[in-house]
Image (cartoon, rainbow, N blue to C red; front, side, top):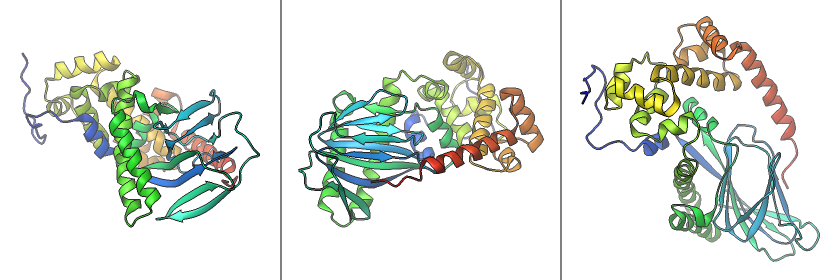
Length: 336
């Protein structure tokens, strides 16, 4: 059995293996914002435009049923206990189920602990939804979010953590309903815990499809990937990554090849270029991006980007500016 060699400047992990998902959750620095507590009845509709900041939308159904419409997808029927996440902030509409009685109900807005409360007028509410967004604060996490599908739906009864998630949902609902001091802070922290549970359930249910989820699903490769995500600009060597993964270089290479069919340093190149692409799409200057992701100059980044993707950093930045302008136009319609 190959022995792992100690590498100067790299701390060996403890005897108890790290929990990759907990490490990922700390790295992501997710900040949930609870925007609305909605009590709807009758024939109602609640549109959500494309998020201008690229944040993720989430909805938690705590009572009743409704329908979710996303462009290019068949409508999804949601029931109490379901949680839906739209990682890329895509526009969508929540509405009453087909056949709901009456004309479209107007809504009234009030505020509870800085959280907007929307309720249908002149009709008994039968559906309650907690609506919010997730803000991701670092460049590395945007790459993790980019690896997620356009929509994640976890049905209440089907979760591995169904009972625990239902309790969280009920606690969030009760705190918002009671409108007691501190409710906003409590519910935000509970929503953050719910997001980690949702991510864990998605990775388990999806069979970890996609390069990044597959690597994060294996403790050995996850340690190396998390190190790269934390310090993408560091000039990593295979020996350093193997030390962090608590394994030999040969074993780490085999683990990466088994998961994604290429070695760790090739993944590091793709990771850096993926981070660079996301930053350029947000409007960052190519020279700044090159430094942040580990290239010695803007021209070095440009050569690597063109060799891998056939485009130059300036082209990506202009495409991001055009897409941002399109989202602003699409998001100009006011919410009801």
